[in-house]
Image 1 (cartoon, rainbow, N blue to C red):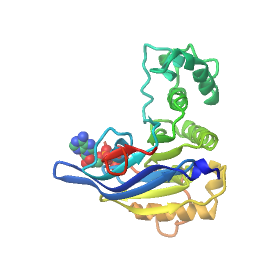
Image 2 (cartoon, helix red, strand yellow):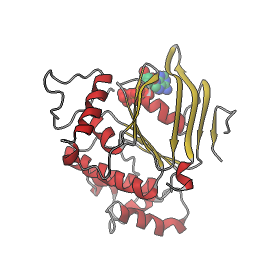
Image 3 (cartoon, rainbow, N blue to C red):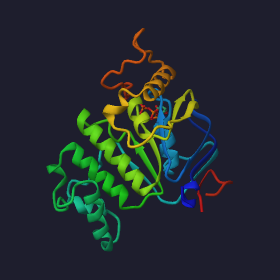
Length: 268
Ligand SMILES: Nc1ncnc2c1ncn2[C@@H]1O[C@H](COP(=O)(O)OP(=O)(O)OP(=O)(O)O)[C@@H](O)[C@H]1O
């Protein structure tokens, strides 16, 4: 581990956020270091996306502090491409023209070298999401926020996209915060998994498994099954009796619809 990777890129202390009378987050503490992959599970409506929005500076806390490294980038469930711009222009959108070369390299890294001049409408869902990943990569994020980025993909494309993200994060080492409803995805990708419920983390545990974590080998690994069983239990999804260690194809929960003294700041 390099000195850089010991650096805390996300530091949240005593975070509280309410919408009207409804307190969504209540006393959240979180630290994520450079190179660390943190996954957040939780029932629908528990405030996972709200926490990401607070980390991105799109919401203000009602109490507590949110500190992040300066370069924070989000990838969403939908790719959010500008349809009237070609793929390369989407990747470098808002950046100086001199970054075009970097944009081309980012596209090559996500397996879309040669598609620079394609229009978004001609891409498959998986390809469009890879363009969104390239658009994040080219900004060299110290903090990468992933808000259910695989949820809209078909099962096979999802596994391929998960592999790609694991590979990109291993290479570029941002601090990652992934929001997902998919327990298997969290265990496969993350160094740490937390479950958010009723405003607080009810689980925050290390996933200390070797990498790379292939989808097929993980399905029969007893350590993976144990993490999976425990996380599902904390999410209130009990496996059928006598089948605690029999994996299904995939288990996903239903998707529902500064400085230290300021409310949000940047870690210098
Ligand atoms: N801008 C807002 N104004 C009012 N209420 C909001 C706002 N944003 C979120 N909420 C409410 O806060 C709660 C948490 O929403 P959030 O989207 O963070 O949950 P989530 O855990 O990401 O849910 P899901 O898993 O369904 O995506 C919900 O009850 C939601 O209706």
